[in-house]
Structure formats: C-alpha cells, structure tokens
Image 1 (spheres, rainbow, N blue to C red):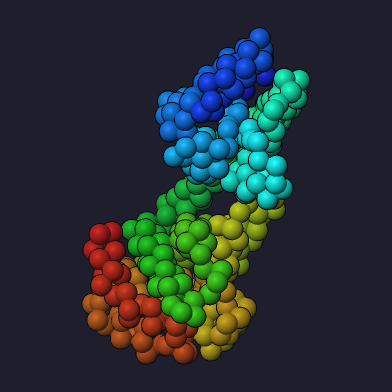
Image 2 (image 1 turned 180 degrees about the vertical axis):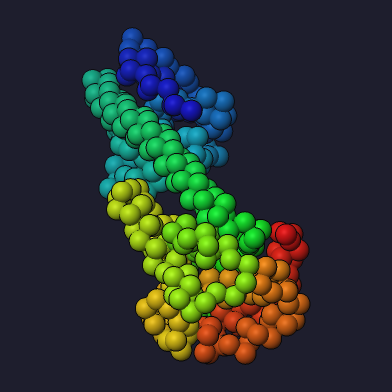
Length: 367
C-alpha cells in the first residue's frame, strides 16, 4: 500500500510534557497560534497519549517525579510507533553531561529554562521541518521500493513463464520421462540443502541460491529440442553415430540458455546461469571421462554434480522403453559404486543421508 503524503509543518501536533502547570500554560500560549498542542503533567501520561496517537514533536521536561524525561525518551525511542518523533528536552540542568545523557537517550535538542519564546518556536520549527523532509524522503523511497518490487515480481513471473515454456518444449518431445523433471528438481533441492548444512558446506550455497538452483534443474535436458525425432524417440538402443548426435544435447542446451542470458542481460539472474551449467555439464564425470568437455572433480560446477546424481538415480528407478526400472536399493548401490569415478563423493554422501526424503519425493511424483 502506498504510504500517505506527510502533512505540512503548520498542521503539526506538539505534545508538551512538564510537571509544572505554569510551564505547561506558558508553552501552550507560545505554541498554540501555530500548532495543535497537547499537554501532559507526567511521563506516564505522555506515554499514554503517545500510545493512542503519536504527536509530530514532543517538548519534554527532564526533571519529573517517577519517570524522568530521559526514561520517557528511552521508552518512546524503543517503540517503533514513536521512534521517529523528535524530542526536545526542556531543562534547568546546566551541566554538559546532562545534555550528553539526553542525546544518548535519543533526544534531538535542548531548550534551557528559563526559556525564550522565540527560541522555543525556532527550535520546534527547525525540527518539524527536518522531520517533514525525512518523512517526504521516506515516502518517496517507499514509492520507489513499491515500483521496484512490482517490477521484480513481473520479471520473476516472466522468467518462470519462460522457463515453463522451455521445459514444456523438451517434455513434449520426450514424453516418456513422465514426472522426471519434478522429481529431479526436488532431489537437487534436497541434496543441496544437506550439503549446505554441513560444517564445511560452501558459503555460496545459501537458501536463495538453492532455490534458484532447484528452479534451474528442469533445464538439464532442454537441449533435446535440437535432437531429431528419429534419435530422441527411438525405442531401442542407439547406434554409435546416433549416440554421438544425442550427446550434443548438452551443448545445444547450454547455447540456448546463453542466448537467453544475453537477451535478458542484468535481468537474467542466477537461475539461468545455473541452468546453463547444468545443461552443459550434468553428463561430466568425476574422473574426467564424461562429456562434452571432459571436466573432472571440482572443475565440474557443483550444480551439475548435484544434477548428475539426481538425474542418474531417477533414470535408474524409472521405466524407459529400452529398460525396466531398478529398485531404490539397486539404484543406490549403482550410485555408490560410481562414487569417486562417475559421481562427486560428497553428493553421493548426501544421497545416502537423505534417502528417506528422496524416496518420498519419488513416491509423490511417481509416473
């Protein structure tokens, strides 16, 4: 909601707090021609008035019984509703340390007794003008923030819609994978969270980064849109030549996403960067024998190492036209056997540690 415009200084409400009726009367006479004036004879009464409706400025006596001015000021500054109300202390105390105590409590200024009416009006006017300028700046910033948030939501909506369309293209051409995309997305999220929670977890693996990474996971096979139907939809085993063509989907996917990154520029965000890493490198192997770049060990982006385990595990437990599904135990044994050769050992450790949750995801998104 857009905050209301701050009101002008002449409409301001001034709360005067003093336990001496004569001072209250005199200050009221000085201020009433220009401002709405409220009066309080104690710190407790001042807090009560502020709790109902905070004034625009407070003139506050320091020496009062029970609650002195410093304590009233501290309580008002501790309350978000009154934190920004300027407080001018009214005091007969002459020592510099008394003023220091007032400023430490949150006061904005001091007026010394006996006070000059002209000084009172000048100090009040100055601090109201400062507060009005601050209110207008906050109002302007709130408007800008609202516009920025609206633009951010629109960019995210456009990004998510684009992602849905891109992934749907790949799914449409490779319908045999069923809910593979949803399952692998949640596998990646689960594995990444486990690794991030470890004492030596990567600092860059924040919850926000994990969310972007999980959103990117469905893009891993986006390059299959460039693979001919005769190869992509072939029910049997691929020939050596066909397999070479199939392997190019990793590079095609990365190229496609790089084009999207180039087009969106600063609005691309980390999701597409993760998507490009995953698309190109999720078939790399820990020992360097994978494709397309033959990367090995930590040179393979963590996003792709997570996807490699999630992708292979899900493929193993799923029925394909060319194979039967493995059991969860058989799939886990296969992944374990590939730890340190095919797969990052840390990601395999994460799979072991999260197996109950992984199996739950597999059941929830079963084909």
